[in-house]
Length: 200
Image (cartoon, rainbow, N blue to C red):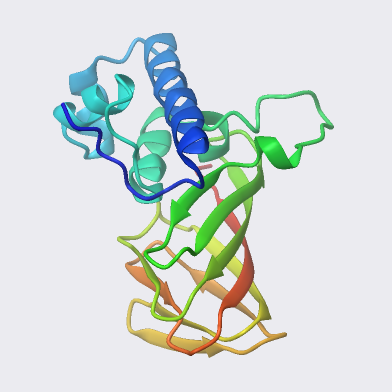
């Protein structure tokens, strides 16, 4: 079977490392909660076939799929990529920071740090090259993202609201609705994002 890769990681070795960790931890969380593949499929709105491929490390899930699966199990994406379940205060080395999205032109999204779910906080660093775009169908109700553009200019659309965030500017977005980020300029854009998702 051909491996389905969602252009979500850096090098071939990193793709394999992240994919194997994600597969093992999704399966472990599912079994710990005594969830069948059918039940997880129903809760997450992800096909059983896709879950089987993810758990067998035959598919590398997108950020959107990871969000759906983690929310369905009451854990965070950081739990699934194993940068959250540590002592109260801990260091995350550069080698441990996963790249979870790779753009068509070489852009990337790295999950710098995150807390355990279901109420979770995440910190991301994105780099998008000219012409790249990331689209999301929307996160769980009440999810809020804080964005700060370090260099370049980032175009975002949240539902019907469009913003252009210039270098040095910040924005707040409630992202429980369809949204996207895009670099419509001729220069790279680098931005940081903090995501707050609360279920209580």
